[in-house]
Image 1 (cartoon, protein in one colour):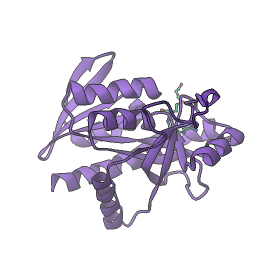
Image 2 (cartoon, helix red, strand yellow; image 1 turned 90 degrees about the horizontal axis):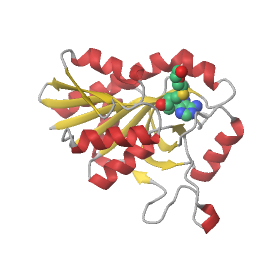
Image 3 (tube, helix red, strand yellow; image 1 turned 180 degrees about the horizontal axis):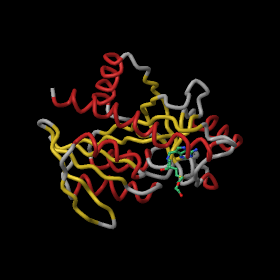
Image 4 (spheres, protein in one colour; image 1 turned 45 degrees about the vertical axis):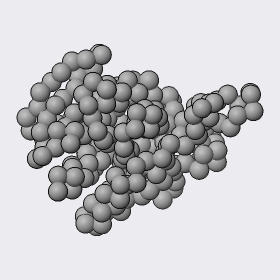
Length: 230
Ligand code: 3QA
């Protein structure tokens, strides 16, 4: 079984590379991909760079070039739901693009013809995540994640995303990865640990908590890999 694990920023995959030990680096398409073995699993690990376009490229490459059969995204997110505090883990039940807008033609926000507003995560991977959370006695939130090519540090925009999509957290890559995986028939899961609340303090909080929250997410992903290893 070949599993892709991706992040957007180098900080999001460094804790994963530290855990797998030996890996081989392959340069492709302006990024570096890392092949590693983890028990019986073949891993392909990479960070895409920030945003929907780069993350779509990386997800596609992991699947089409490296043959990934499942994809796990690990990283950080801004909280929308006030229940989510810095360091908390959230797994996406479904994802949407908050910045996709052809409403001028009567379409809903987040929709383009032949697409869908929400892409759903793989049920089997979701249930593995829940099992891991139970075993660790950690709280794993489940909810809607909204993606867009903007770092949100604004209450008003955040409320709009909450009201329009019922989103619990927001980031800049999940939905684009979801669209790619859905189109190519690859089960995927997007896991994020909260780094900020997408508010006035978001820039400062993000800088402060990127590393620690990225590690929270990566540690959880490693436990999921242990479970996939059987
Ligand atoms: C932010 C990262 C991008 O990959 C999306 C973090 C956490 N908080 C967010 C927020 N709004 C949107 N997304 C997020 N990730 C990139 S900008 C900082 C870059 O620093 C999730 C996320 N509030 C680079 C140093 O110059």
